[in-house]
Length: 162
Image (cartoon, rainbow, N blue to C red; front, side, top):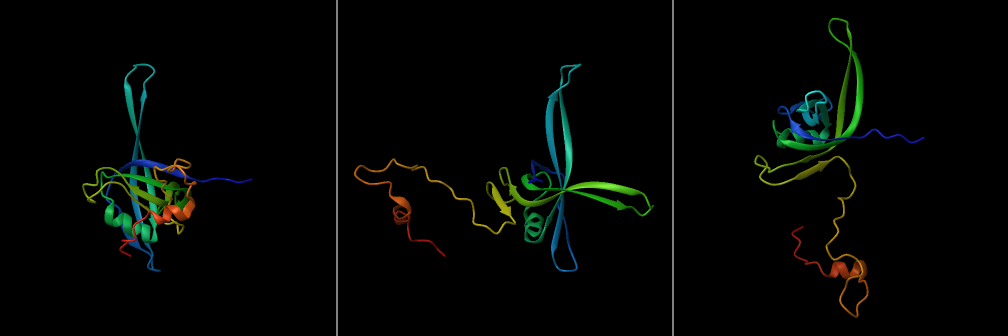
């Protein structure tokens, strides 16, 4: 049977990321993300706000990007997976921790620190998601077919700088 271990968070960074490097040279970034939910208290009828804190760890190039662009208070979108760890502290007491290993991150908000709007970063090596144009299918000029992919590529400008 198939299984899924996926977490999606949209929240605010609680502190600047902690960046460190493993002996292999790989970067590791740790950040705390706060998510807030509101509910109505059944007894008093007042609105109650609850904040949950999540530990998120990023690796390699994504960790370096997080260290450069993510700052305390910045809203971010994170995709990753849950990881549960059991360890023994220095006093010999067994402890448990839950963290999210992030594999995709998107900066949200006004971008006052990054100089722009939203910016997306991920560790996937696949092509970027395809964005559909507003032309839609079937609505072309009279006397012409749907055009196909060849017609769509002919409409683009060749002034691409790379």
